[in-house]
Image (tube, rainbow, N blue to C red; front, side, top):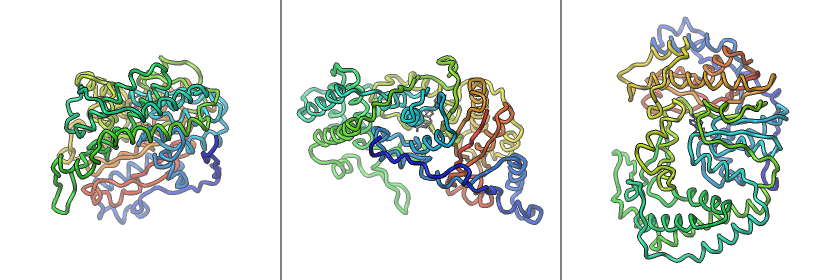
Length: 478
Ligand SMILES: C[S@@+](CC[C@H](N)C(=O)[O-])C[C@H]1O[C@@H](n2cnc3c(N)ncnc32)[C@H](O)[C@@H]1O
């Protein structure tokens, strides 16, 4: 695979066992009086929940559980899918576990698990509710013959010759005027129209992904934290200030806005083309990618799976539709508010917008004990207890279905981060391990890859519990 560094150096045997237990627990009785009641109670719950779990120092995966590496990796870099992990990470698990059978990613996102499987010559399956993810995963996992690559090259040349049109282009996205400089918006819409007219389907989709991937760079917003932020809103020691939109745009963007968008677009396409020329698309196995909910994956395929490797939404109220809102509207994946609302409802119950009226069937004692420690007046939304319950209810459904379709001695690898609400930590990694064990899986190991930070309001209250705010890889065996 040319210039991707896929070598994996650390064997699982080399990982060192670590104790996650927060320090005061060691002298629990001594500290109990000093600890706030809630923290003492949480530590008791965690101790019981985690007493038979094996934690390993997984710091060598630290840089692989997020998108930083992916941004420089051929093919993966075509679309900046911030929530993705690195190809190297999946590759490590495929190799170490000696996977020969099918693989699956129930939250396939930009398709990293599928790409790694393809490179390893494995059959793979992926599913995602977000139409942008499905498109990106499909385009990145398409097979491109030399004649397809030539077509992309032809389109790149044509693109460079496009002149600014006099036509006024329309969009159904009501925030467009706010999110974009007017001329930049017109340029984007003109290029979209140009792409729609391309006959050759694979080329059209490659250009569409390139176009989608530049939207954030040429817009007035950036994806940050839990949502999108206006770039002209700046933090100062005295709070936030809004720089007037027009003034900010004039300072930020060059005079010739059309050419600015065109250069961004053609540079992105040039980078894709250079990856295509290295024959990244030539692996034989083409993944099966579906648009739908992972809770219904068994409706799409019934093949047995040897390795399911994924990163679900974390139980932290991050909304994947909100973060991709601009691309969803401008790319015409949605055209009405009701459609957008419905789409949000199809997501895993990890945020307040995804709460449909589904009943919560699965109950977990540890979880209920933790939820009972929430301080309602400190929660920013009354629905948070139900988000948390809904999350583990969905996780239970998914793991149950996975159990049924996983081969004997097959594996599940889950990259997940813990979260905190009103000073109470939700240890998603060990709760998932607990649920999996109830279902019948063996919990092989939990690799702690890094510790997470939280909002400054919560930080103080979590002083003794900060070890539990971690991102881990949970490894299960059927
Ligand atoms: C952490 S991201 C996965 C990123 C992926 N591992 C990658 O490397 O690109 C989680 C994904 O879950 C998807 N998702 C949320 N709810 C879902 C559901 N019910 N079924 C399937 N996918 C869902 C989101 O759209 C998002 O793409």
